[in-house]
Length: 311
Image 1: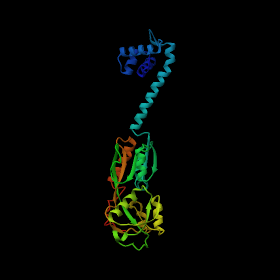
Image 2: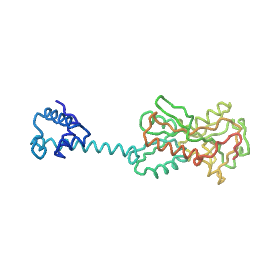
Image 3: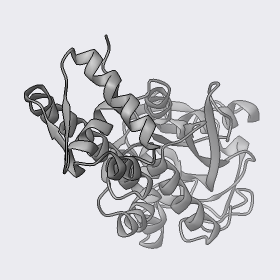
Image 4: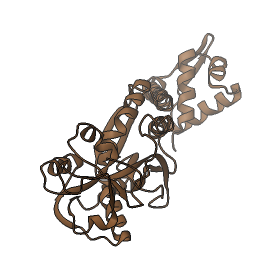
């Protein structure tokens, strides 16, 4: 016959207190219920477990042998309760995040700092990938939160999308480039030598789509993984590139890169957080930090109109 956990916990309470009445009070049961559980447990074991005497209850040899197992069950359940309480209070746990390169470098750090200050005991596991890689990781259950560049459209059922900010793609050129002027039209970009991000990059997909919509054909000269490599290639004069406005603020301010205004709509994009429909508490907490920073415009400035943005 099966042993039932509730019976074992009641048995341990009786052994601890030596009294049916005290055990009933501790277990929030009636005294007849305690007696019934003890009888059922003894029947399952096949041996008497307790003997009444004038001062209370005494364990039989079988009861003494069973007691450590009942006590271990009580400790395990208490440990599970404590674990659940700590998770609910974010006093422990792990948060897995996969972020696209732009968000990992320019959006995530400030939110992580705020999150860690509030929940220092939560272990952070942060990885970078392009947009497609971040989405794949979420759909495969390999991350709790994916941060991508793109519209707030869930890529599959069971996924929730939240806009956490906005960004604008900029055309960047070396300062001495012939196209470094205050304003460029779409036609000025025809046959322009361009350095592209790798396939699967959200930045590349947006820029290619905008150029295609405008009927502009550029000349790919190089493909690089990562914005930093692209910026260095542009500074070296290998070609032009489209990158996140967030990633080139310092270089533009220092005069290392030029970024003319473009009469080319469609270069604005959302920055999006993806979670399961029912996110973990840790993912929800970090998403709250990202939204708070975005609403306070501490991550991003106002969304820029690319037809008016100067370089």
